Amino acid sequence: MSRLPRLGIGVVEPLADPTPILWGLLAALDRRGIAAQSFHSRACFEPHDGATAITGFAPRHLDSWLMSDNLCRQAFLRGMRRAEIAIVDGSFAADDSPPCDADGADQARGGKLDDLCEWLNLPRLAIVDVRRLSDCRLPPKPAGLDGVLLDGAADPRDFYRLQTQFESLWQIPVFGGVEDAPGLRRAIARLEFGEGPSPELADELATAFERLTDLERIVRLAARYEFPFRALDGPGERMEPSKLRIAMACDDAFRCYFPDALELLEMRGATICDFSPLKDERLPPESDIVYFGCGRPDKFADALAANTLMISALRGHLCNGQRIYAECGGLAYLSRQIEFPDGSHAPMVGALPVTARLGPAEPPRSHVARLGADCWLGRRGDLLRGYLNSRWTIASAERPMNGELCFAGSGPASADALARRNPPLIARHQAIGSRLHLNFAAQPAALEAFFHPHAAMMDVDSPALARVL
Image (cartoon, rainbow, N blue to C red):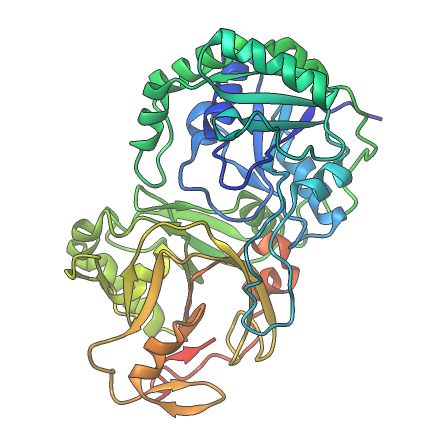
């Protein structure tokens, strides 16, 4: 049996922000030369990527709603191959969000940190934001905790008073925490969507964390429990080679991908080649699929629109019957135009005859989408589970291309119907745009579709210009 140091760390109060403590812990570990791998307990992308900036390792995703216990253990072990300690973050608080399955077929509300703590035998540290306490009453204590981290104490004296209170009433140790530090919190709040802390901010967070925290004690806690799984239960080596070539958009505009999904594609024999929609003039040679992850096309709209050679290359790729998968920000890039909150517009690729409207950043919500038409990713009726990114909504184009939009399975429909439905996925020819974060590592059938498309290639002259999936 291996110790494999690891921790489950979660907030206990709804809407509490764990960022200062999580980034402070990662930065303190990095300062000591301890390689830490961050795991999120929900397979969606966070507003800020502190883990990559601090540790050099992209955050990975475990999700008890999407994955079985075996798939989670496989993903965990793959992610720990270069790391010395794992930090699995999430929430121990009840998720009060309403069920959001459009079909009503599944009432799940997303991955749970408590499940992962059971499946991976994780020691548990709760983050309590003491600024949210009222009338000297503590929040309900989650089951199975090994310790507490206190966030937001006014000063060291206030921290030690609260430490005594929690240890007396909860009967578990307080391992440390971070003071209120308004300057640090303002610096975090000023970060743009998708950004991580600068080296200077990370260093300040590490210092603030270590001021009240015994880091060595936390490291010892992380190694307390045995890890009762000695090896991957599934295939761990490269399988039969494949000739599939995937062109993956990777630059400042597109950077959000699930590392496990990319690893599994490569393990299946796919060759993944990076390209930049901002700077490159053509796609990597012999690309079968172009893959756009989530990103910030709105921030780089002018540069993306100015790269007309790349836009022509993408249109030519589709005209040759080849496939594109684009997620969230990638969907917006494939649309006819982006509409900004002030009403202005920026032209995009036009592969999907829709307008992508940019809205406020809200936490992604768990969602089950039932495909309404055959496409290369699946057959009509297949379910895809993911997290809906409400930052982007789909509206009809100002004028349909060559006639009406067509909803597969429901016959012709007006362009206004598309605006009313705001579907989670839409396809035109071999281009699929998704408002869902889809972790293909958790959905083997969808991953298999990259290698063996489910539906025959559609005629590029088909009058069915857009299909709501």
